[in-house]
Image 1 (cartoon, rainbow over the protein chains, first blue to last red):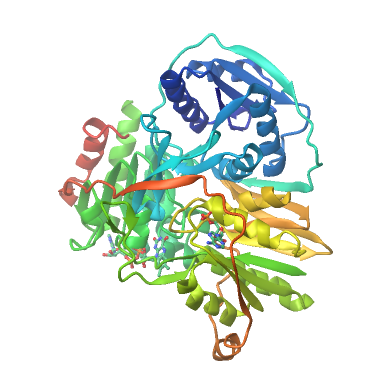
Image 2: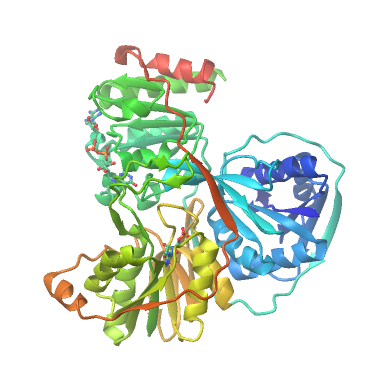
Length: 323
Length: 245
Ligand SMILES: Cc1cc2nc3c(=O)[nH]c(=O)nc-3n(C[C@H](O)[C@H](O)[C@H](O)COP(=O)(O)OP(=O)(O)OC[C@H]3O[C@@H](n4cnc5c(N)ncnc54)[C@H](O)[C@@H]3O)c2cc1C
Ligand SMILES: Nc1ncnc2c1ncn2[C@@H]1O[C@H](COP(=O)(O)O)[C@@H](O)[C@H]1O
């Protein structure tokens, strides 16, 4: 019985969410005695691979032999399935990122495993294998029993703490050739450079219709930059083209759970709250004291965004300089 | 071109979520059901792709008879025919197994799902189905065009967009931006009445999870208001008390 973790990388280094996944696996390993093997696809740099041992991986497996430069869920899931089979692993942890979500179901089919995505807490192992997952787009949670010998779990980023657990891991490589050649060809990648991806951000500054127009987003971006935050928006803001759709959070947008969510000029409609209510700390800034967002917030300022924002930006900047 | 759109039926987005039977079941009392919003996008884009080339669009749903108003709505939006697999959709793996069993010999060139159902948020049926049918899959697509058996795609990735191409057959999952959802018109509503809605019995089975208990997010303690004149205090509190920045 081995626990396998898919260590997803971006730009040659592992994502924080991959370390979270290793920690999740380590927790299960500590309870069951199963070894934790972290698997990397197409990463060969020894120093990078070693970083996985800091969070509790007993073994690091680097898979090579085909190109993993371009993402194809079919190829990547087949490679992970081959790794799981060769190690006799029965539990696989991936991150619930865009790539992880594409891989996890395919992997579950390969391994004839039970699948749980959007998992938000450490499992309960006292009575079978029970995981907690987000349902109803942030409005509720469910405890789910995974009733199969094999399990694939997709862990939502920022759900568990990353704790150091240094191991003297063993390092291995594996060769993988896909049985079917990939039919998918990536033709271009357009990354929003210099910006923190919304799905990975620990702090998010978000603006709504109360900001009146796209020309006022400079203030949102300035506050975000001063706080090291990503930017987001409400649905009407993206519908009107003030901001790209990729920034729209809520029930029909992205669901996020940063440590801090600051909502400025957003009323707090149920569909908006659904996507952000799992944030650890919520701040609402709205000129209307009756705005529903104040019921969902930890801190609030009843005031005009155009007066409050410059003060916040100045305070955030001065602190950043001191630090 | 033969396109299959997989459709789930979900509580309206304004639904206040509650549970019954000691928090073991979702309380459906008074809940309005709608087509999963992402599936509406998938359906609309499927129609846009099929119409110019005289292709066909079939809608398939795993669910019980109470879903039929939503299936009729899909027909009134423009799907040519619909199939309901008559079983309660207990988990994504069960649904995908039923869909795969039904679809496997039907020769679909393109299978479209939504990015996720807004009720159980698995985001899994498309990938499961693709693996079961041994097809490639691309999820959270914001663009698809098809030319000469080749799909040109764009999808969301963490922190950006990726473009790609893939030959058919292929499974994709729809994300916002794919198109503007179509609203049924009077002619569509009339036509939908006589369009075929076949009911087939389930065959494959295979749920591997059991929903044991539900819970609601913990209620907030109440908001602490900060004087707008002293907005800078908020930054101090976030830094030194809440310790989140
Ligand atoms: C099917 C469906 C799905 C939906 N999904 C989503 C979703 O995923 N995400 C989402 O966000 N919405 C969603 N919505 C829309 C949602 O119901 C709300 O309409 C939307 O969230 C409102 O956006 P808003 O708060 O920016 O705008 P408004 O409701 O117009 O609120 C603007 C707020 O700004 C405040 N304000 C105005 N001026 C100032 C000022 N100078 N300073 C400070 N405050 C000011 C006002 O008091 C008000 O509270 C959905 C709706 C439907 C029907
Ligand atoms: N009961 C169902 N019947 C048909 N298709 C479904 C069903 N449930 C989910 N799907 C499809 O799978 C997508 C993803 O759903 P899910 O994996 O449940 O989040 C949905 O957007 C639908 O396209």
